[in-house]
Length: 213
Image (spheres, rainbow, N blue to C red):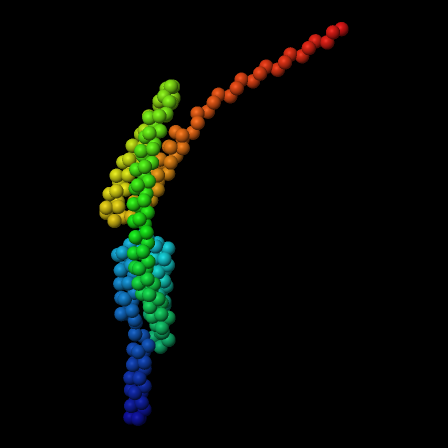
């Protein structure tokens, strides 16, 4: 009887260590993956390479879902290998995001510089066209006054763009600059279009000759 009791204790101890070994959650790997994603977001990867950042976040969600699945499984059947592999993939992806975000940020910054120069040029051209435009009718004067207001709105937007650039938000600065440039290009096209000429009056149809009887 004592022998069987001893064997039972040995088996119980063995099972305890087996369960403890199999059920060990990859805590360090989780922390490393979360830190890597946070580090990528800190350099604005979510703005400059939004799709790739979103894919990395999705990979993180899948890893956490796998972890939760294993935690709810029978301790004897738990296996965190898949979760560990996913977490390692998250870290690798997040690290590469930092480098890609830095490259894209430099590219967008250059675009903003170019757009600001284009914006200044477009404002000057649009103002010149307003001055040259004929103001013979009330309608023409009203239209030019409206265009002048739109140009001033673009000038105010240009000031906002400079502030966005100074704050380091190059994505917002680029989008605002593109919007202002599109508006000014539309104004320039409208002011440069030739005035529509009135349609020529239709000639009266010739009268039919009366037949002699």
